[in-house]
Each structure stands twice: as structure tokens, then as C-alpha cells.
Picture 1 (tube, rainbow, N blue to C red):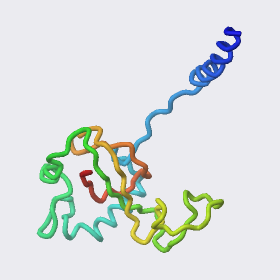
Picture 2 (cartoon, helix red, strand yellow):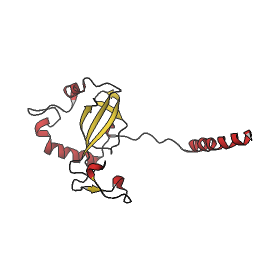
Picture 3 (cartoon, rainbow, N blue to C red):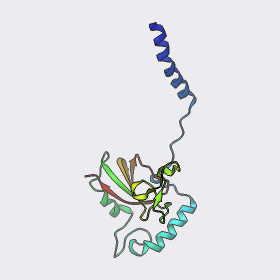
Picture 4 (cartoon, helix red, strand yellow):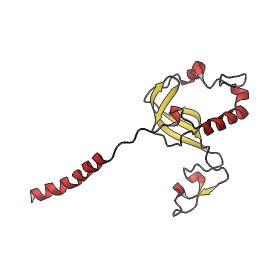
Length: 164
């Protein structure tokens, strides 16, 4: 009887071990923190930056009369006080979301009833800001690595706020 129970208990474990040995880990995906953008994204972002931001922040993100720099050592001074392990909220602009939608099927599941966007985590909303509670994993030069974060590669980061 004990032998039968041991065999029954070990069978699922053997199946998991066999599955693990046949599944190969995929290489890590590149994220927005790796600065990986397609040529189209880069071109689109450059035009939008020139049109909307350059007049204040400068053509090379170096700042101007009306706004601080968005790169370089002066910009990194804004990170003073952040350390690895800190919990922060990354605020993103959900650039692929539709702004003319007020009701959605939660998680895009049509089996679920239409629900007001303010009661969901949908990217479709009048003011498409994303709030991502994350942990700072590393601060490396001009990059802050965070995780876990649910966002599409290329999603613009608007701000970082500490969790108080």
C-alpha cells in the first residue's frame, strides 16, 4: 500500500521533470529599458518630440528656458535618493490605446459584459495613463531597471513617483 502511494505521489513529479527537460528557456526579451526601438518607432517619436517637446526641453533633451533637461548628468540629479529595492510607480502614456472609448470588455474578453473604462485596467481611455507599481532592480548609468512591469515595448515613460 505504501509503495502504491509513493508511486502515485512521484508520478506527477516525474511528469514535471520530463516537461522541464523538454522545454528550453527563451532568451530574455528586450524591453523599453534596453532602448530598443524599431526604425518606425524612432522616426515617429522623433517627429512627435520635435513637434511637442523640443521647444521647451531643447532639440537634444538638454533643457531650455521653460523646462529642465531630459538626459545627461543634470537630469540624473532627479534620481538622487532612489536606490535599488525601492518601490516606485512608473507612469506611462498608453500610446496605443484608443481615446474615444468609454466602455470595454474587461481583458478584451467578449464573454464579459461591457464595463466602464474607469472600472478596468484597459489601455483604451480618454486620458491613457498607465500606473505600474514596480521595484527598482538596478541603476546602471543613465538607466533605471525596474520590474515586474506590464507594458508594451516602446511605451513612453512619463514620470516616476515613490511609493509612500
